Length: 295
Image 1 (cartoon, rainbow, N blue to C red):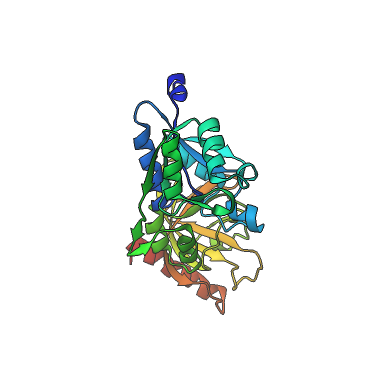
Image 2 (cartoon, rainbow, N blue to C red):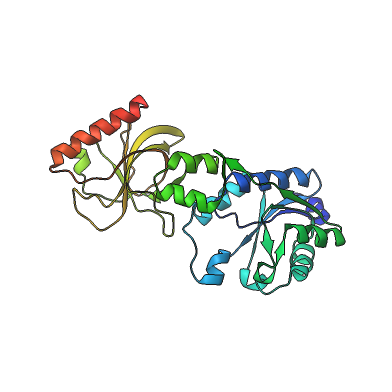
């Protein structure tokens, strides 16, 4: 990024961007396009989710903050974080003047069709265009994005993940939902059955998928492997702790202590309690055959 581009101003993407789904991507891609070769493509993020600031409780995350930052940076966007406390009481007019003009030096802004801003969410996309025009800021609104004839939204994606409809969630995200977490020590039962697993705790605050078994993908040292991932409380073993256990097909190696990213591809079956470990081992074998065969 050159000093000249920074001095020329920014093209700013506006929104919550709490999961980077297809609707968010449309706004971000338009922002990069608007930046051309002269402006700095920038995304404005809040230091906390707006709902948490208002109600005291944030919705479950679709990705961690660090994963979001890496995703945005790879897309060529400069991230500017603004304290929500600093803007929640601003009028729409003051938001444009104090934040977009004075703080971000915006020359172009892009937002979704349903974007709200200003105290009490009193401003909408139509008002934003009017206020930006008065400041000689180009303002573009991105239309609603549909997926499988359904409106794409973070709320819809969370619901799909919680219901185990991971295919719909992935389609709306435009990528596979997943999580990165450190591999921790387990009871090593799977190893005695010929199906060693990596055990991971879900990141704090992440949306919890429906308990059950998923086809997954695991990338290790640049190579992608198919996997079988169980998310839940392991009723056959008996525990109150939610855990992700993944058997990585055709992989052998020690991953303890490493941060490994697991992507969920499709839901295979609900979690269930088996009458014996032998029956559980047989089911895991069948789950692996299902993933290998792609059925």
